[in-house]
Length: 621
Image 1 (tube, rainbow, N blue to C red):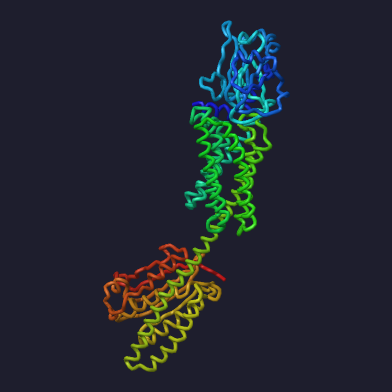
Image 2 (tube, rainbow, N blue to C red):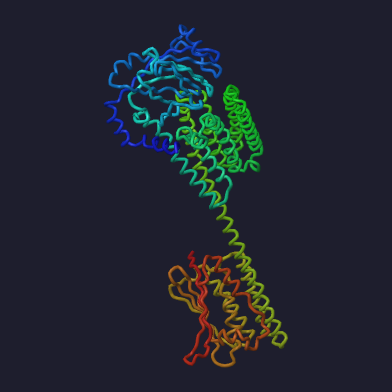
């Protein structure tokens, strides 16, 4: 529940409405910064020990060294001048740094008492300022002042090292959570900007993963979630919500960077396919994964031992080692990069690696765990995400183009394979016809047939090198084929080929021999079995929008007789041409309606033949 309250209050801090409320409150709001003195001791001294050394209190600027987990600091706050003249205010709020361990000494019912106010202390009586992880506050009475003039805090900083000059203490007559300043408003914006960016990138990469099933997009979406938790976890109280323990939250929050590194390295290797393309870079990736894993194990051991000094040492030095190793790999990748993706990843990862280094060496710990220093992380990771977004869409473009080329090549090979199934079928029928003429002693007809067959075969073989041929060439081959069949069957049928005036056969391309199977079926199964009457085949070409309409119309026996095989050519093997042609038309993107077969009947419901309508996508040169 605390997580949701903290998130909502932080969220409201960025809206003008809440800022207007703050401005209305400001007229009656009292807030003053108070001075303090410090006594540094090496041991965990008691209040009595402090009294004996009270004369050694000094101002913060007189202490030059940073805090150490081994040191204890006694802080005396002088409040008399700030509280005594506020006669109307019986209560006041003391805002102070969120120390790891701290005890405040004050007066209650005419005796001195102590209260735990450190964020790592059990029974902590202070409250966290909603819009700042670094500040806590405590509600006090005027009567709580020791000797009616000051308060005393005993504090230890064990989670990091900082300058005591960064410490600050203020008093006010209203809770800090009831007032949001303009500075608080500005401080929230980077985190909400980063939250929005993480949401967009996570949603995008997850969508790509579900659509194209590439592991690198899954790894990157996980990296986005881990990065968001690392950057915004303390600000939005995510760790506190999960663990409900500030001490555990601190250790987990600091170790999340190394978890983030491991996830990013898996994404890096998957995205670049470094194992195959860049073996040395892949080796460095494996080394970095092992180092980050070792650091996480060490953090777990140090947590179990409660050794914060060792923890500070290992984390500070780990940044330098990990980033130095990473920069070696990135420099090598820039040198040997095989494509723009390598340079995109090198630039993006450089921004990712530079952020922790800049944070470590240039930020000041003004909000505890270098939370303001997280601005460097936000900037670095945001730059990395923006660069990666370009790389992401570029890679999708490359994969789409590669898949398109593969599909086009597969379509080309499929079309050639399908056409190759028609040519042997036709050649077999033609050779059978020549054999038939020779067997019945029609030598002259056989020679004419063989001459036409050789010319047709040559044209077919030449056209087999291309998927499409001109409509004029297709018509020429159909005429040669029909002439051969006329010779074969003693001119027992007639044919006519017509074309709309608006069509130029020399400028239109169609798939090679796409109509031959229909013409063959019309002859073998329609016209030739017919015993009496007109045997005519009509082939026509018309245009309908973006399609070429090809009609093969015969006056044969109809499909019912052909199905029952009630004709003299019952030994004729079933043609596979129609099946293959359907597949060829489907490969052109036409659906099953591209071929329409119409059974014709007279007024007495007697079959009058069959009409086949073929729609071919019109391709004009």
